[in-house]
Length: 303
Image 1: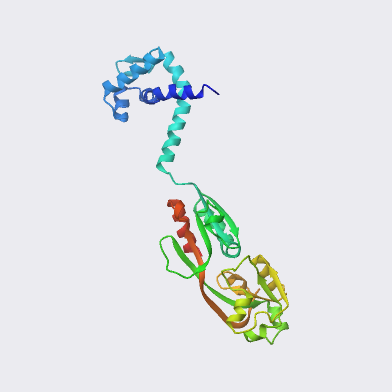
Image 2 (image 1 turned 30 degrees about the horizontal axis):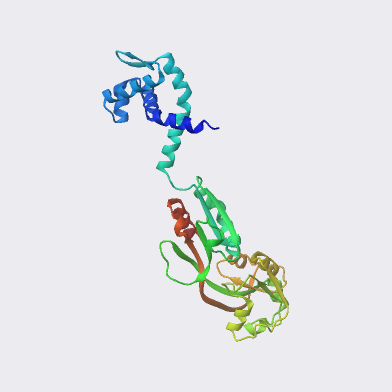
């Protein structure tokens, strides 16, 4: 469309006067239109005359009690009113609310499965005008998804700020199904876990959460003493395997509370281990806006 640029330039010269033309046609009086436009009536009349000269036809009939459209004015009004009116309303809507209408949440898979998904529909209902997306990875980092607005993942404990808050600290116990515990009544201390099937959550590199290796090490137990292990890359699979009596697993307080409360899982031994880590919810600095802040506070209040 080689002529589109020229058309834009030509339209740009007259766009303001065309808007005034629509305003006068809507009000039916120069005085009322001038007041709304913030112009004097003589100045508005001059602008309309300039547009009429450019069009080569009179657009209004000047009458004693106002103005009415000529045939040329009616044709021009029919041609531009739907488009200019729609563009003006859309522009006003964008200017009045410049904030993006979407929020992207990047979360680690375990937290998303056990804490976010159960409240996801309520979150969406609370912000019906927003599109809320949930993306999951094992260890979330801002560089993984450049358009992420909120990130939830395990971090070392530090002070909360306006853009970052600790949802809960890492507290881990050994869990299994009630049936598995009945089959192994000897499980009373951490040492009694040795020789049992350990169900583990794997991740690339050094994961920022308890693994069986560092959990056993914390109790001065050899981390390789138990050779019988099941490993999964999904914590949901870890939990389901424990519920199916395939072995014992590490259970995070704050993630599996419903499974404990319902009796699907029980503590295999009474010992609980805490770390200097916790699940943090944080806003990505480059994307802070009102909608992201609202979603941030809603999640923090409902977890």
